[in-house]
Structure formats: C-alpha cells, structure tokens
Image (tube, rainbow, N blue to C red):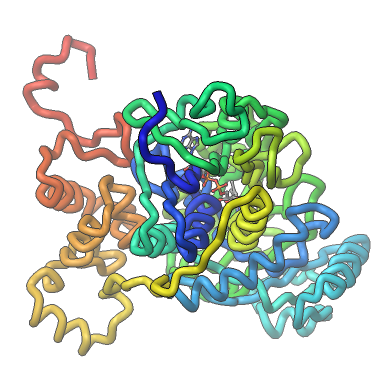
Length: 492
Ligand SMILES: Cc1cc2nc3c(=O)[nH]c(=O)nc-3n(C[C@H](O)[C@H](O)[C@H](O)COP(=O)(O)OP(=O)(O)OC[C@H]3O[C@@H](n4cnc5c(N)ncnc54)[C@H](O)[C@@H]3O)c2cc1C
C-alpha cells in the first residue's frame, strides 16, 4: 500500500549534485526529501576530489560536461557569496613542456574564448616564471585562466545541506534506496514509491543523483539505459610548510582520459598533488597504491621539481562515476517523473550548480509547478572558525566561553566549542566532525585529537564510545575491553 503523504520531489543521493539541487528546489513551495545511504552527506566522491572549480576551458562544449562547466563556475561564486565556505579564485596555469603541447594550449585558448570565459591569456616562459618561480625551467609557455578557484568541497557540501535543511528540505541519512515502484498499479506515469530498509515514501518526482550507483537506481525504476564504471584517482596532500610553493593551480596538457596530474594550492594552505586516472571494477576501491604514488610524484615533479614524497601528510582516492557515453547523463527518462543526474564525473564538482539549474528546468518541463517562496533564506548561519581569528579575538572568545579555551586539535587550532557545535549541527561520525571543523586534518592526522573527538561525540550524542564510528556502518573505532578479552585466541 502506498504511504498517505506524497512528496513533491525526492532526490536520491546526498553528494554535491543532489544537495545543490535540493537547495535550489527549496526556493519554491515544494516538499523535498534527500535520501542518502551514508551516515552523512558528502561522504561519496564529493569529499574525495581535487577541490578545483575549473576555469571553464577544459571540457568540450559539444558535451554536457563542457556546456555546464563554465555556468557551474559562475554558480559557485553565487553560492560562495550566499554561504561563505572556503573558496578562493586563485587562477590556473595550463603549461606546455614541449613544442607539440603549444598546439594544445592554442586550441584550449581559442575554445575558451568561444565559450566566453574572461581573462584568458597566453604567457611566455618569462612571465610564467615571474608568476610561479618554483615551476620547472622546462615550461616554455602557459595558458593563464584567472577564473579557476579552489574550494573546500566537504565544507561547501555541508553548508549547502545546512542551508537546504534550514529552508525546509528533509535530509535523511542512512537511507539506502533499495526499490522503486509505481504508487498505483495501472498508473505507470503516476507517483512513485521509494523503499529503504526503514522507510517507504511516495513522490511525484524522483531525481537519481546516486553517483557510482546511479545505474543501479535507474534499473530499479525500470529505465536502466546506461552503465556506470569507476575511474579511480589518487591524491596526496603535502605539509603546510610548503604553502606558497605554487599559488595557482598548475595543469599539464590533458590526456584523452584525464586532465593529468595537477599541483594545487588547497584553500587551507596545503599543496595537493594528483589525481591518477585508472579504470577500476571495484566502485568502493579507495585505496592508494605505491604505483599510484609513483605516477603522481613523477608527473608532479615534472611541473614543480621541489615536490617530494617526504612531505606527504595524508593520501586518499576517489572514484569517478563514468557513464558509458563518457558524458553526464542528465534529464527525463522513459518513466515520467523519474529524472537522471548521473554519470557525474569530473568536472562534476564545478558543474554542480549548473546541473541543478538544468534538472530544475527538466522537472518544470515534466510538469512540476515552481512557485517561488517569499521567505526563502539564501544565507547560512556560520560556525566560528577559531583558527582564523586574530589573537585578540581568540583571547576574548576563550575568556567569555570556556569551550573556546580548550584546544582539541593542536595542528589546526580547533577548540572543544567548535566540535560541540559541529555535533549539534548534525555531525554523527568522526569524519563528520573532521570535515566540519578540520580537527584531525593537520600534520599529525588526528594522532593527538582523535580520542578527544570520540569522547565529545559519545558525550554529546549520549552513546557509548564503542558505538561511535569513523564514517558510519561498522567503522567503529573503540572496542569494549570485555569483548576483546572474550575474543577467541587469534581473534582481533
Ligand atoms: C580524484 C578525483 C578528483 C576530482 N577532482 C575534481 C575537481 O577538482 N573539480 C571538479 O569539478 N570535479 C572533480 N572531480 C569530480 C567530482 O568529485 C564529482 O563529479 C562529483 O563529486 C560528483 O558528485 P555526485 O553528487 O554526483 O556524487 P557523490 O558525491 O558520489 O554522491 C552520490 C551519493 O549517492 C549516494 N547513494 C548511492 N546509492 C544510493 C542509494 N541507493 N540510495 C541512497 N543514496 C545513494 C552515495 O552514498 C553518495 O553520497 C574529481 C573526482 C575524483 C574521483
């Protein structure tokens, strides 16, 4: 039997695409729900990427990737103005290391100008060196694109989600969608019913933004017209002592499957090198490998010779969701009311705001009524970031609120008050605290603060430490001594 209440739109997937879409939908008089299988939003590939808002020059405008890259870039400026997450327009240099690569630069320059991207310039070697003195002497020319930016992707997704929720969107985590069926037999174009292990919901429109699993979700709705495969990318973060080594994103000339290995000054002051681009059959394979590290550092050193493996403080991998068309799969399907926002490989982070606009137009065409709300609130309430305050402001805050006098993460200067606030805002896991506050992201990678974060999670959530997880599911971090003692010999 169908549930009595019928939502207007359900979005499956709480990555940057689903969350940005949900926030845009919250502008209208609509009842919107996001269903996310993970313990928190943004735990998919949306947190495991290079964090670059691309300048707009990279993708072929004949594809959806290329058509939505530049409007997406412009959309991020509006999101940044509304929500104030970490974002800096640092520009990018796409460098040529050989005479053959000069043709690639010229091609991308001309294409970028046709796309209307402002500020593009061809620089000679002397100008490149004056701007980025640590680049290789082998660089003979570069394309300068000032519109590229770097963003804290996890912080952005969380603030977009908070703002969507403040505007009435229900964001339901730990809700993996397992089945989809028509609400009423004999009404194949009518509302849909969506099942998770604990809930059954009805909706008039269903958007599939399920990332690597979007092909499975489409099949559940009977419109499985595409397949998603994984393309893994490994990334390596270098110590903050190298801050300033490069001040813009450095791109090599692209390969047929990727933009190549980049050297990126992250918003938080580390240098990131990567990613690789390897096809993988295992969509959950986020392990880094010695081969990946070797490939990344060999390529990065060709651009910036001073880069060294010795400076690595953290490494991770993300898996791009690549559709068989090698393009985004966006739009209406054979099932009225079921809309795809799938196959969102790179530049999906960049394009997310434009993907949201595109899907809203598709929903309008499918009959969704869009009446703007007069009470929509674009701005988010901001958590305090103790580390960016002046010494005087820090002292005043610590004197007025004891929680700001207790330092939890020494590397990133995160206080107890910020961690408690993050948990009150919805962090449920150690990673949720980390991505909201940066506790554990510094040089010691949580060696000092993990235990304190676990204690605060347990205390604020009213659960034993043994129930706190790293990222949901069974990723517990602490075991009860009695369980360990009772384990059969040889058990762990
Ligand atoms: C190494 C790497 C570097 C990259 N760098 C950049 C970059 O610098 N700039 C850029 O623009 N792009 C970049 N990208 C691409 C970008 O990260 C992605 O395009 C973007 O994050 C895709 O967002 P998404 O919301 O579609 O996917 P996800 O973030 O994966 O979100 C999908 C969500 O759906 C949920 N889900 C799946 N199945 C179900 C289900 N059955 N029920 C409920 N929920 C479900 C998942 O748990 C997940 O949270 C990079 C990608 C990689 C791998």
